[in-house]
Image 1 (cartoon, helix red, strand yellow):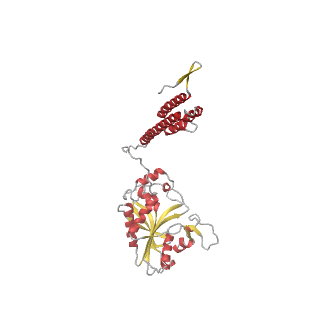
Image 2 (cartoon, helix red, strand yellow):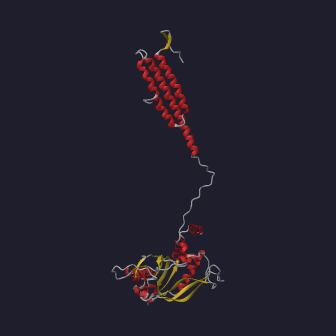
Image 3 (cartoon, helix red, strand yellow):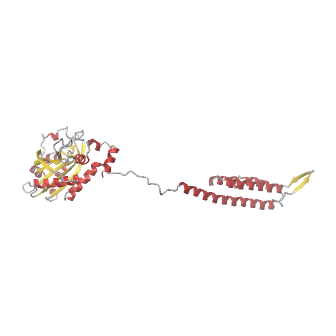
Length: 372
């Protein structure tokens, strides 16, 4: 650093104004350079840039003394000021580059992934067990050549009762069994369907109305509603209606379809038996039992020691049902059966309480999902 120019005034050594300004600029530069090196991050460095080189910064403050110099001295100090300003700007740029590299390295380290760590497991969503059962059942019938059909859940009495040969005095029409809607002046009372058999009527009607004729082979899955709720019954449950109409359809065809379906669904050969029963819409009618899938017919708690478990109702379509949709019962015959989806799923997976399907217990749903 050059020595300042001194002169004697009234017997005292005095520093010239130009040398005093140079000294201030040198002190300012040393102070600024040290501050730049200590800046913790780019934000702090930007604050220092404003503090030293801004309009109200320290360099501007020092430059206010230039106006007090003699005109001849101003160019000299101006060169010195420019040099100081350039040195500070250069030091700031260099510090900015270093801090940018440092911050990038810190970010890389913070975001670094250890590819050797085990991956985070995600919970896998699965279909509800009832929907699983519906899919399995309809797939088996589809492989046998049955078409899938659906119908409205809000039905009228004709499709839900009359066309199915269910007389007015039949208990199924009673208020404690069926959910009726309040009448709004319509001729036909509206209700929540009690079975999926109305789809059978609608499908046959549509076939005849379009100028078609049997053969018809249809499976109709869907929700049904009845006033009942306990361990084995729910006010809303799922049913699958299956029927076939053609020439010379017999009870033997019905038994063959049932045997194949039940064995395919339970994934093992099961024995079946048909017991005489009564249903208004079939004649003859039969309850279908299977050999207990838990004890292989030896007798257990599930089959109550009998070796057999009742699974569904079936029979040959009543001639009155065929007549109600315009099909000649002298030429065509058919079989039909309806099965409760929840009941078969319970038997297949050993589920003790039907209400588990509707309580949304995550533990139960996870266990069922693990079975798929």
